[in-house]
Length: 531
Image (tube, rainbow, N blue to C red):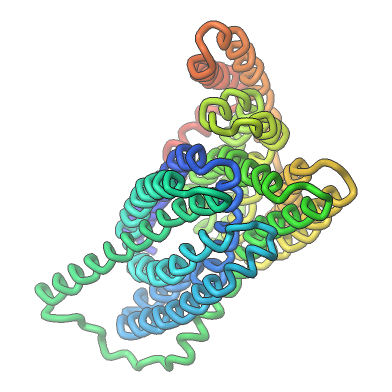
């Protein structure tokens, strides 16, 4: 691979990573007003519906961009434009079929799923999300096509536009349907309104790709008089479909394990709480707090930590491919450290400032405010374990050990389900059983993944530099933030006290990193260069 191509791949990957991060931030921001408008019961229905929607996506189309881009890129590298385009057409038919089946199944099974999950009104948001599965399936093929041509710009632009439309429509539709709804279905109407944004965003992105495809074809026709596909022998359609299936299958299995964890928690919690005599509406409200307010706060710092580290992962793959094991270990060390420098202070900050975070962002929680605060305080460590489990999975996959993370996730999921079900059935922990499961699952994945990384690559974790020093700095940061917030909240109010404590926390953390020599000048230079 020449230097120019490597730089282009790094640039394209960076564009996609930045777009993904922007989309995550937009998603975080719009969910705040939407959650406040929707109410606790509506949030419970919305989150369970999305868990089921994600399962349908995973089984039908989630892995299509990866599969198409990988298989097309392999053929285009050899100059085989004909079979690259044949593969895209076959993949499009494949996605249309699987997306249509998943959409129809979700739509027709909506009422039964509502009964199964003990969630009255769940069928309403599910019926809006059903056609979204089909739209996203086709959209995934379009993104895969351009990624296969090593052009990430259309995917990046479409992701951001999709999320902006999603944000505007979700908040507006939620407010509209909550305003007109009355009676016992008011929460379901609110949840349904939120899902319209998902459909509108995906539909807008698909229309955008339609214009991009037309513009691309016109440009090719103007420059070259039409597409030149070459004279390579055509591959059999059956073989192409088989290649697509074999490529998507490992990703489907891997992602299904993660998605099943979320939806199994929803199923177990909803049914066992009703079995133990808890009112269905009350159980749905508390479940909504866990899935919406708590998970939102956990997911954002995890996404930031992962995005900051992801720029180094292609370099790890390249070093592994060249057999440079020393560089693999050095870069693994660097990317883990970057990850922990973000994840550890995020976890401590969320725990320390749980009260103002929930109070400022979600004032409509009402009598569930105390539960939301306690969930964030007790479960904030999940940020560290999710960040490290995601990173360690990527490192193993980058070193060509694709199956191990899937096996580890499967083992962890089985233990997770047993722990959550046992805690809910035999104790009165209630929603805090979900916290135990939410922390234990990524922790187990971390342990298994890290054990394999040490065994297979010879890497030795620098516990003091990567974990202890950031933890010490974050601990002092947390004490400073708590002190500033406690002193100010009685004089200037919760919002200003929280903002001041966050600014002080950032300054203290940076100073402590310097004092403890947690980051060396050489490491800073490597981080800036994103090696």
